[in-house]
Each structure stands twice: as C-alpha cells, then as structure tokens.
Length: 561
Ligand code: DGJ
Image (tube, rainbow, N blue to C red; front, side, top):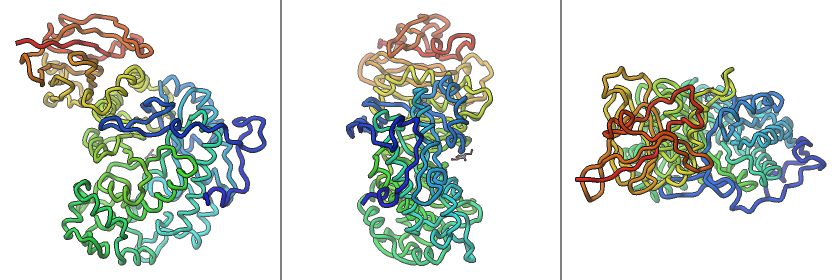
C-alpha cells in the first residue's frame, strides 16, 4: 500500500492552482515518457523535459524564500531578467505537514503557479530529516517526541539535534511526507511539468561539531559491532573493478573480506565510520526516494559539499555525506537516487567537477557562486563544455539587491544561445572546454579532428594577466567547422587525424544565435585573428547588447602541408 494513502486524511492546497475544484483532482497525467527524465547520450546523461534535452540555467533561492509566494512576488521578474530557466526552491517538511498526517501545500502551490506564470521551471529541494547535517526542518511534532523519533547520540549518550538514521519511525515519517509531496506535485503539475527534478534532503552527514565520525547511540553501537549488511558486501563483490578507487583502497587494505563486522571488513579507521554512516544514511534516503518515486518518478539527486574521506589530523566533515568517495555505498544503499550533485564555492573548481563527473555520475551543480579566481561565466562554460553538465545554479540568486547580476545574465544568455548545439554535442567528444589560470601554461585539448592549444590571452603580448581564470567552450559542428565562446584565451590548432600536417584558420565569423539560427555580425581577420595565426576570444564590449555580442565565434579550419 502507498505511504500517502496510509496517512493522508486531510489535504490543503490553494484554490488558485486548481481553481473551481474542492479537492485536487489530478490533471490528465502525461505519458511516462513525457515526465521529466534522464537519458544517456554517449558518455553524457541528459535531462529530458517536454521530450527535449534541457540545460538547467538555475538559481537557488535562499533557504526560506520558497516558503512564501507573497515574498517571492517582486522577485520573479528579476530572475527572468537574469536569463534563468529554472529556480531551485526549498520545500520545508514542517511547512507542508504542520500536524501529523495533515498536509498543507498552499505555499508550494503559489510558488508553482508563479514560476509557471514566469515560464520558469522548478527543482524542489526537500528539506526533510536533514539540512546541512542538522534536523531543523522536521515538524515540531517530530522534534518534540524524541522517544518516538530518536536522535543521533555522541559519546556519553547525549542526544544532538540530528534524527537518527537507524530509526524506522524517523525514516517512515519522512517517507510519508515525501510521498505526499510527490503525489501532490503529480496531481497539480504532471501536465505542465513545471517541476523537473527533486533534490532529496540537503548536504547531509554528521555535523562536524561535535567531533563524531559516527552515531554513538546504543542502536548504532550494536549495528557497528554487527556484520556489514549482505547487500553492501554483494555490491562490492559484484562491482569490484568499477568501485571508486578511494573506497576500493580502504576495502583492499583490510583484505577485501567478503563478510565480517565493519571494522573487520574496512579496518579500524575513521573511513570505516564514514562508510558505516554513509550506508545508514543511504538506506534511509533510499526508502524515502522509493516512496516518492512510487508516486511520481521525477529525477532525484543528493547534494553535498566536496569532501573526501578525512585524512589523518584533518577535521571531521559530514561523516556519511553523499560524496564521490562514498558513491558506491550510496549506489548500493539508495539505488533509485539518480546522481550525486556538487555544491561548490571556493575550492578547486576543475578537480571537484572531475571528482563528481566520474563512474557514470553526471555533473549537476545546485549551488555555486562566482568567487575568485573562478568567475561565474568561467564556471558555467567549464561545467557544460568539459563535463556535459545537466545544469548549474547560483546560490542565493535572489539576494543581491542588484539582481539580476550582469555576469549571470551574460553567462546564461550565452548558454541559452548555445543550448541546442551543446545538447547535440554532449557525450561524443565533439565538445570541450578549458579553465585557464591566467599565469599558467597553455592547455591542449582534443575536440573533433583538431587539437587545440589554448593559452591565456595577453600572455603573448606581455599584457599583465588578469587575476581571474579564463574559460572557453569549443564545439566541433563538422569535420572542420567549429563554434567557440568564452573570454581571455587565444587558440592555435593542429590536426589529430591522418592527412596534411598543418592546420590553418579559414573564415572566422563573430555573431549570435536567434532561435537556433546563426546570425553573423563581423567577419574577423587581421589583428582580430593574430594575422590568421590564432583565434582570440576577448572580453565583450560592455556597451553592446549582450544578446548579440555574447562573444560567440564560428570558424572553419583547413589542412595544408
Ligand atoms: C550550503 C547549503 O546547502 C545551503 O542551503 C546554504 O545553507 C549554504 N550552504 C550557505 O548559504
């Protein structure tokens, strides 16, 4: 029997969304194929919305903004102006189920209605049992009843404000609410499909303070001293060669045992506690996702801040979080979670994108910001061009008084123009991108039939390099035909297929796309192409219309000997 029917006796939703009907009657549901879903294209995974690949050009609202349609009213037009096509909005468990089994979706209905009016899609963030490690979003009736809904305990048996992962009561209460949410979204939106994906919980894992690697409650101690679950052991044995190296190393270091206690199988290390917590969180979330997908199988993902297994003398961080080192534990424990997503602010953008976009896990970045040395445009170009990203999203998008942020508008305007081309070339090696340290060496990338040597612009003319990293995307639209976009790079070409050994630059056009059609403005040559020796992608004159001068170039190469 479905979770929702088990509990839901009273349902509240705003009349505006389903005007004229006493109770939500499901709109005619679209065929399964038409609800938003994921599809493989070569090595890439694409999000399909209304039957077409959809690149998420997103902005995440501050945690509480999505709880009030009134609060959001003046902000939607600014988000449209920022050229977003998707808004990531939190849905609070406490707000939708203020009393047990009594659901109120009126605030959510207002957000869905207004996003639809502004032709924006939504990714809903389920703030359920855990957010940033802590349990601040469960309803008060859960928080108050710590006997029925047990907590994580730290050494000495003290409860902390984190719901325990081993409690069926906690898990089932979250799953019931999540199922009710997805059932409601299906009822009010499966025809319009404003809601395209769901993030389940938010940056979970034990809080870094107090310093605990695992739950120390009696229930957890008993489980930790018990055998590793058979499902996890079976998964490790069935996927040994495909395991992420970090996990495989821990298992092999303890002798690659196929059964035993957690410490027998993974050794006496902090990583074992992280694997143990990862497994327990995954099992819990796995059931929540199952309940939601039974109602409405939208793509569902987890988000995490980029950590790895804690190294000796390193602080403990979010033990059990859905990070790449635990990707296999999460896959074994929560098989219906579609992918792990990356929240990234300061640290090394390129290496963390690579960390997440491996072992078949697509790259999606729910939270980022332009922060030196990686500006927002550089992050956007690199994520889509180098990692076939499903999407990217600016955190706190509605915050800056100056919304829309001109860099955001420019970056998303550029991506919107290139979207059809990018979607066509994802996953087959005919597209790539660079992220260049202005003081660093050139990078070589293979794109189609040519190898591109990409150098920071200005390095050649001794101009002082800028501080921010430069980035550019390159798409081979034909054997010798390319599109490129970006800032601050110059490019030299050499063939990488048999034939005449030199590459020359033919016709170079600057222009823009209008509804997928290329419109040429200037034809570049002479100084603008280094007298035909290299292509240059420069900053765009701020006074020009960003829709037209987004810095896209279309060019042909030729071979000679
Ligand atoms: C990461 C979290 O996922 C967000 O919800 C928010 O708390 C930011 N940190 C900080 O604003």
